[in-house]
Image (tube, rainbow, N blue to C red):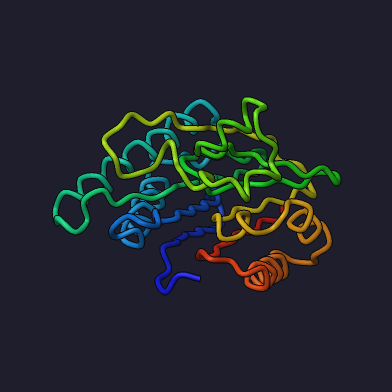
Length: 232
């Protein structure tokens, strides 16, 4: 595992307000990955907390969440210009917003969101990586991703001046749904059936997180591991 932790996350849960979940994984091999992920989490969570409506209004929420990602990108990029050692720092970013009726996600990079509903386990987000695009086009299987030599090559990330095509997902909320957000320190080393089994069989979100981190370390995870689990 890396000597420094380049993952950051924020969870905000308050009564009468939507739940806010933010996860960022600083880019390994680039300068100041930890700074980039911390800046992204702080800016995105504060912007969402200020701008989100108290009521579930899908069109407005979609606009705010995509705007949050775009503004976070600009914020991290501008910060990268302040010091030469921070030039080209970057991070992934996944944000989730939970209302009584719905769960919304906006996403850039290869951090992931999974959902378990009625024993059906699925990846909600699409990886913005070279191999992720190959999987989406049917040219590569999900199991082949973990050993592909270009599996860590991102096609989109926060902190660069390029236009971002933000992934956005609006899901109806159902009793019994279980969600897991993870950095690639988890899903880069564990097969999906292992993640699914833990999510299905654990009695609490805390138990899922503990199991997933333990199993990732046992598997020799070379990267930082961050897991956020939500039981609805």
